[in-house]
Length: 195
Image (cartoon, rainbow, N blue to C red):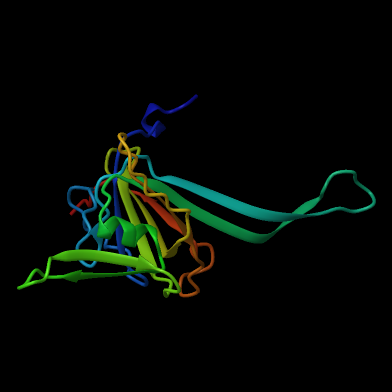
């Protein structure tokens, strides 16, 4: 029999921080709701849900005595997180394009104020990702990606319909994490501290 509380729907907030930023403290959340502090920065409004896709590659081992594989060996794995950012500004573009160069020019005499970005032969910018949504218990579900790289095809449309900026990040293995936690980690807060 199923459990209704496990039917999760609803929004959440996606945060980015410089690569290597640690997971926020989860053990002393009196409210059970995670609210990350600096250097975590919310991405802003999203036009699409956050999708997480895990793609393992498994080599099958066959022996002469059986027609089916008798063992599987994990040889590669990948994880991708994707969404569409609603706001189409320099910040959103910087989050969607890992090899972007951006800057701001202040208005002055004979100088317009400008927010500008450019792409071409740039350096890839790795980030850490954090998503805070709702757990089955009604507290926070926290998804932490220690190292990610924006790698999706970015399309910026100009027309009558607002489309947002599609963005995808590939999770990179973080050797500083323990085995089994190197791509991403999910934490469901199920109760608040007792004391």
